[in-house]
Length: 214
Image (cartoon, rainbow, N blue to C red; front, side, top):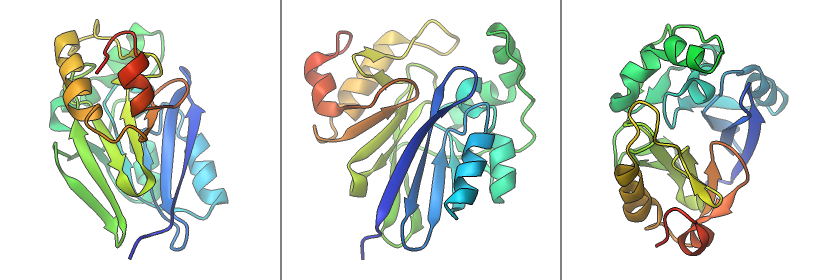
């Protein structure tokens, strides 16, 4: 039986990072991806929409995506989910926040690991496929919701652009491989939700992205 899934992507935080809810319209069971450095936006949305958030998923551990993860996870009675290759970055978050002149608290919850190819079964008809897409960071992942034809990709791929690779853990050839072999292998109609800026589709980026064409 397929769940009736809905989603909402909301910019929040100091750098306008995009966090995304996906939920089952009938049961109100939800996941939250990237609660940014200001989780209050997402706590309010969940309360107003009567959402029961079961997982707080992180695409990667940069502070603008992940600084609010522990507060959000605690509020929802869960823990953050993050690829192991970004765990050190996660724990060093205050140091990297200061590089941008922003304060970030030290994480006080240990993340749960996620790996390439994992399928997260939230409930019947509500599953998420994980793609490990390193290059922007070593632990960057994308979360694919095949029932919605949706990929939440963090800072790997943007509308007409790609994630920066000049920060620690960045590697442009690796990023290019991740995009070509993982993201561009998705159906062209797949809607892409980047960590910043407007949405796009896999088809649009395969033909029009100035940095990585198919």
